[in-house]
Length: 375
Image (cartoon, rainbow, N blue to C red; front, side):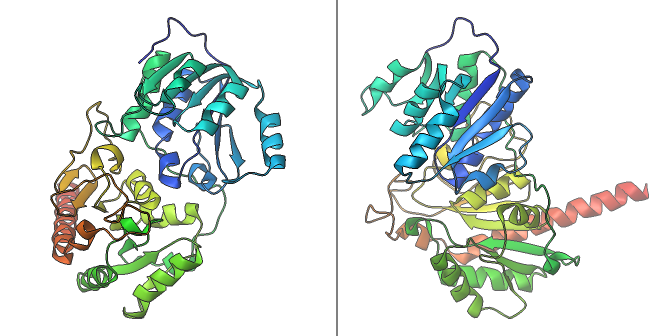
């Protein structure tokens, strides 16, 4: 880690985060740290256009700049015109080539996460003034990014900032007061999926426990088809919202749920930020690095260890079982469309047990509140 001797407060800051939805949400503690340290600075964030919604209404951000995942020459020219020497400080949150090129173009002072010396791309540390090495094993992503605040000599803030809806109507289906749980069954990659039968059995148990069941999902046709397959095997009162909500609407829906259940996906990170009880199903993924960030967690220690079912604040992490877990690989066949035996080994009974625990805790808290109010 290379630290600064002294850095004048920048007037304009660019934060670069060209990754997936959950990765972008995990930069928000870093952005809040920057905003609190430099309240007069304009803070812009560069993201892919399909992830910008996760930052909607974020009070720490002045402007969200977007670029396509696969930009054309015209897209590159337009982006460069927006960035070129417009900033006093560029904060590069990942080790890819494009973020470093954009940071080099945008600002004379740059701070970044860089590859280790023995890894491809180690030369990138020579393009920045201040850097910390990427750790994929033993440092949670939020804490990894907060090391950049240490380089700048500013205080860490540990709060995930969820999207703040600016102007929308609540869905009519949620005008009532029925208690409900949200199930988000579909991750982007096949190797992070649980089983359809597992989701069906879990949904039926939630209904038997007195909760309305809401199925959420994105707009991709294959995701809608997957959720529809689950929905067809459940009672008609189960609500299927796959492809029917914006990120802001879904955040609002999750925020009022009794609990949320999902795999290793961006929406599970979003649910964690909303503060509701989250049951997260993990298999090949290293939870030390990528577990959902718990609400009200403000420690420099990793919240989760590598192995075992665990609870930290509002996060209940259930991990698949196998000698190789977590393998850090893309499933058993080492590709994104692979199955993961460890996830398939998660039994619905483990989920049911955790649901019972959450509902019992909520009931006890409600009873305590009634007793306190009566006194």
